[in-house]
Length: 421
Image 1 (cartoon, rainbow, N blue to C red):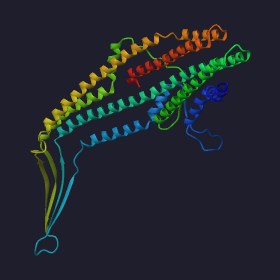
Image 2 (image 1 turned 120 degrees about the vertical axis):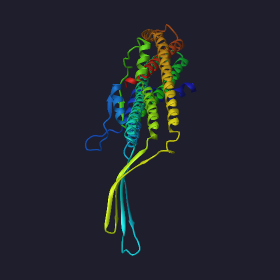
Image 3 (image 1 turned 180 degrees about the vertical axis):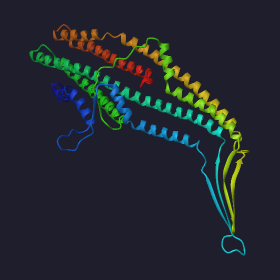
Image 4 (image 1 turned 180 degrees about the horizontal axis):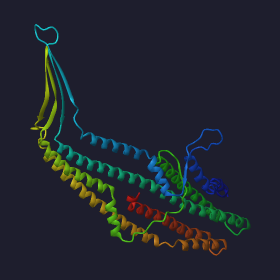
């Protein structure tokens, strides 16, 4: 009897936790969204409430701090490339001359000059820099898609946790009803204390599962808010989005390879490396210098134009060989990127096919109908409580596995179509 009287003390918190599971999830979301205010009290930032993944991705694209940092860094590198193809700074020199027998300055010299490369060098360097900037922009696109894919995966996880929470709520509701029924039967002598305790222990186990699921849901919301620059998002969807099926795998592979930003960035980098060979070859062309010179000597003054050149006998040593080696390396990087991306997309398609086959093996309506029949059977005394929990536990595990598989398939589809983000 001591065990029978002690168990309800633990059961109290378990039942309260199970009945408050929806309130717990809402409270966690509200906590992540910040305190509510009204009247003339301090206002809080507006919270985005939406059931659309596209709305979430639009907000993340606008507010994500990592993306903002990458964008600014890309802009800085682009400006640096532009700065590499401008004229040299002009040079101004002034000299004073003094001689014996002459009071003050006896003469002076003023030289103003401007150095520049041969015009064809600027043209070749411009083409090379344009390709380099395109590579930077494609790298930025690749990083943007990576960040948006992470945000979409969080949305898909939130949907999964909501569905699992609904399933756990159904379990707890049935267990709670069974507890009330068997407590009445215990009083009338139609049930044993062991059966009542079995239900109570099941409720305690469910309470742990609910707490774990709510914690994961709360963490997903907080991670989503962090990706949104700290601005809270309440994503309210509880059903996975409709996603097009893959009709022709080869067409999907071609689309993926054609739109992949990392491949395009590698292609731009390889082409820029080839243009660098042309720039290096023209490095042997002498640099030109023009200017103005004025000389004064006591009363007389002379002035004229200055023309000169700089012959790159040493500065361009082995630069062509270096450019060729870098071009070969860039081409190898491009080839590897293509092979790696193709292997990745083929693996995604294969995994999607296997996951879809596993999902189709589950008959969710049949499992839910069986749960109703089991409940009716145990309440009518047709099966024992132990048999009910054994059978129902297996069905609930299968339903949870089905939800998890659907989440995995959605994430695979998001990866396959990431270039559309």
